[in-house]
Image (tube, rainbow, N blue to C red; front, side):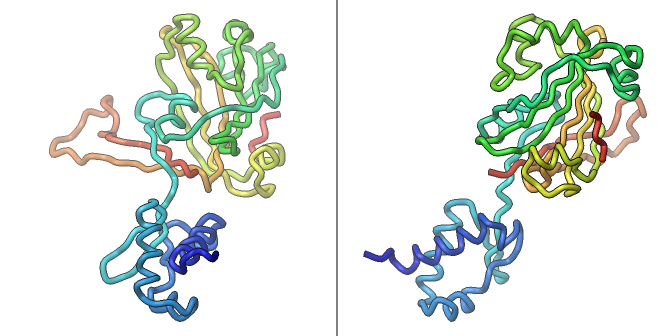
Length: 263
């Protein structure tokens, strides 16, 4: 028995939203156009659109029509968080696939971040970061030997460095310094993220430090741009803010959806 016409129409639209035929915030065909295309009544079209709206796949603008809802979910970055915390806040199950976990001679640019001599032995950890089992990001992480030894016994496919240090060793991760830029994906990153070589990705470079301001690790994370964007909310005060206070930042969030090659 065939599904009701409004369900067939909602399935058709749902599929085209999922495959990117209709991009986030793109307007869907008008009710009149859908009626003509599928030879159905206005009531049938409206029932299909109501179904998609209730599922959070579209939103309506009075007098304009229906638009695709951005399915990327929000989590915070004003507080220093790790990948699993960001994913959990967004309602996404986080895990990792380990691509490399081995001693290396540290590159000069990374040595400066970790406050060690170029060529000194460090640990390099490469991970494909997964959200609900799908690639979201790829990390290169360099750790000084002391911190590398602390995380060695643990399963890094499910645990994060922050959680191991804080929960298992009582080490406080005090602060981090970020740099965010758009780059073209190196080949290894593109392969891990299942995107085209040189496709644009979001690179976040992060130096994490402990309570004594000693480097814990330096990391370069490449995010798929179809899975994450950043939103910024600021307040404009009525009085000047001292330079040392930083900007009046209220919210700075990665928004998730369901060659700087350091090798």
